[in-house]
Image (cartoon, rainbow, N blue to C red; front, side, top):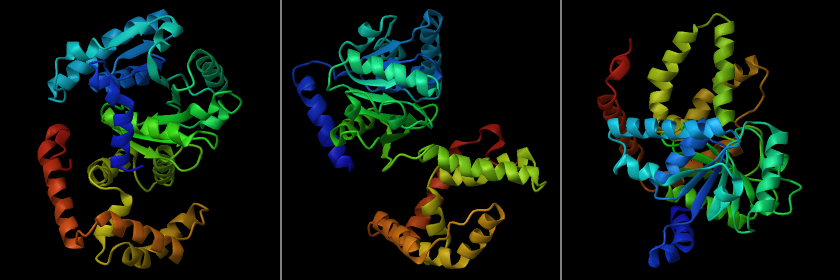
Length: 337
């Protein structure tokens, strides 16, 4: 969904509320652990009323101090543009699940990665909420079809998987199941965008979605490099921290290779593709970059450039990296140690 479409859906969802002085619809968060508290901060910072629920009274009580600590850190780093007490004031803690769900237009489940547990929770949520309430899971690996497939209201269920912590890493993967209604995906997209998140719709269910499959590919190779005596743990971390990771904080892997090679994606695939194929073969992987696949990726990258020339985009990348360098003198990151 485009940004314009997201804005339109958000306006439909919240416009009437703003017009008559009411606040936007509330968000209920089920599970007051680390991710639950982080989600509460995301939505409260965006002006939403938030109800935080957990069946463990001690965990629920501890969440208040944890939220205050995170807000204080944001203030210390100049990342909060209003009184932290006002943000915290939008979050209420509810021991009773029905009280937490009252007034919510979106429920974000944040329970442990346990299929049976999520199945019980979603069954409860489906029975206790109206048909227009979106039910989203923060699951990192389990797709919605693994725990919501037999629910009467399964069409309003999906995964909304965040990076951790979501108030600092704005990407969120929206992963509908085959049975999820498209309108539900649109509503979740609009809500996340209105909260300052960067939503990505995953087109089909795969274990680990996109975030963890990319992270897993790098991690698998990192383990192999240590195992084979090629590099130490610290050296692998250093290459990612001071090289790949820093560059990827500005542009992604496809844009990286597009801008690293004059001639773009097609030239990179022609020159480097055989080497990457041999590297994959060492690990038993056979996923060739076929001419059709390369052409598809190149076409998508060309569309993303939107008339900007290769030289202009390279200059932009370099300026962005310079700004990043200037902003990161801490931990010896100004110069490689």
